[in-house]
Length: 398
Ligand code: CTP
Image (cartoon, rainbow, N blue to C red; front, top):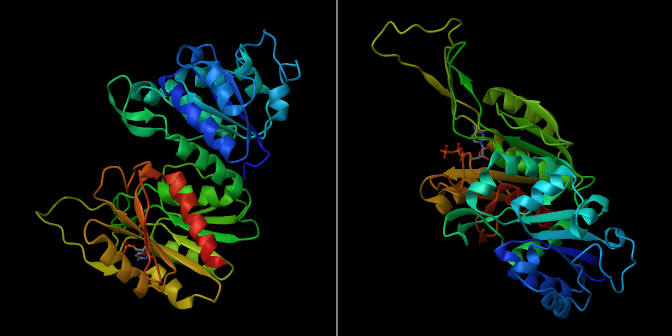
């Protein structure tokens, strides 16, 4: 994958700069030609000589000095690049990049580059969570730049929290996966459901659940980015519809069922991440219910199990993936659902964990397959879970 690729490794001034040596080394071992550009801040943490030894290439430290081997033109590296990785990317550097500033070789190269750009942020948790930094990340993400989510843990400033640069092996793998995934789902039609359904009680109240839709939206986004034709059937959610995805918004389980069945036959892959309400109110009041009595008894009827129905209608070649949100007996309950609903894979989610499940940006799931295999995935962003999940689905399809 990296063989004969020109990778620009931008190193900015954070304590994690020393880890970038390992990134350079791994990329070189994988066959890439690595060209390092250091900001002046980075040179306070590590010397250019280290990178020169590791990469076998000259290291760019300034716009103004003699640059051996490279075309003297200051955007030569931008033209050469197959990818740019900035690791660590400090808050200051991200801010400069998002403002379009070009006051050193790395910012100048980024402004001119056409190749994919990957940032591995590393900073104090509060700096990372600051709306200014988040706004800058959002702006660059919208331009198609990729952010490798920082890890949680012990930070150099003594604090605990998110902001630590991901391990070099994970950064290299992220970029590797990105290259190998490009457009590997074109010609496939993917039907995704997401978010919880709302079952009305009266015109102002409903029965719902805590599903945010983040996991399903991440799957839809990832599949679309890989070239699939994606239909997202979503319950109410505050999330933005991902770029390139056709969305059908629904409220109730009955509406979700109708939209899913209408699109099922033509779908190659169905991923049911929605948290469908299991019951609906029998008599929905036309008017707002007044609190006249001491108790209110609602009679609920069972909703159809959409996924079970899809499992019964499944055609050869179709891949059906379900989710199991559990608070106990995760594997056992998930396996039962896999079998009962005739699924090819089920994503088992322990929703009692704070870092997983509803409304979290990260997820630690277990994947269960028909052959009895159980694959335990580490904690990662829902985006990455989505891509890993699609990788497994594609291998099932072969
Ligand atoms: N599902 C569905 N229709 C329903 C209920 C669930 O399509 N009426 C799907 C969900 O989208 C999910 C899977 O079935 O992919 C499992 O959902 P979950 O709520 O975990 O399980 P249930 O089958 O509802 O079982 P229980 O609530 O008893 O755990």
